[in-house]
Image (cartoon, rainbow, N blue to C red; front, side):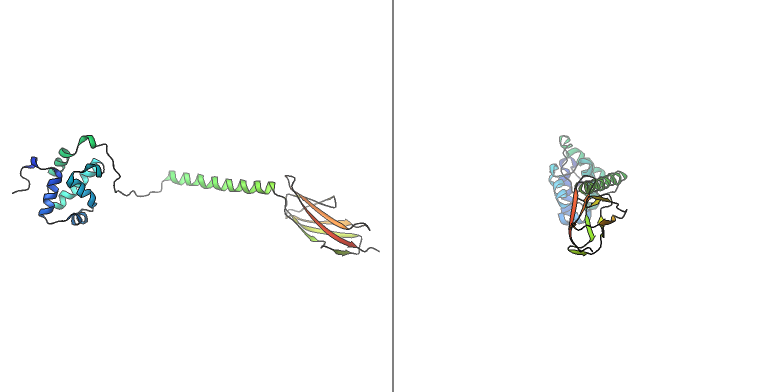
Length: 216
C-alpha cells in the first residue's frame, strides 16, 4: 500500500512514524540524522504538542524529518497545519535551543559603568577610613632612654604628609614626603619628649620617649 494513500486518514505523527518504521530507523537513528532531539521527534509522532517548542520551530522540525524520510515537505507541513491545535499556539515550553552569548556595546557600557562605580566606592571607602583613623607616626630620634649630654636634641621621624606635628607642644614643619625634623632645647628638668601627630579630622597619634639629660 502506498503510504501516501488515504492522506486524510493519517495524522502528521502517524505519517512520520510509518515512514520511519518502513526505513527501519529508530528514534535514536533519526535523531542523529536530523540533529533534532529524540524527545521532540517522539512528541511529534505522538502529537504531544505540550512538549514541543513554538509552532514555527515545529514546522522546521517537520521539514527536516520529511527530508530525511523522503516525504514531500509541502504535504508534511500541510498535515502539521491541519493537526496542530490553534488553541495551543500560545504554549511555549522550554525548548532545547541554546542561545549564543554576544558581547554588545550596551553590555560594554554597563560593564564600564559598573567598574567605575566599584572603583569610586572603594576609593571613597579608603579615603573615609584614612579620614577617621589616627595618622601614622614613626619617631626615629631620640631613642627610648637616650642619654643627652647637650642642651639641644634633634627629634626626627615620619608622619602622614597631611598631618600636623608638635614636639613638646612646639609646632614642627612636615615635608611633602611626611618627614619632619625639630631642634629642641633641653633643660635640667626635661625627662621626656612627646611627639603628637594630628590628622585633619582631629585624630591624634602620640609617641613618648624618655631621655636622660646629663648637662654640664
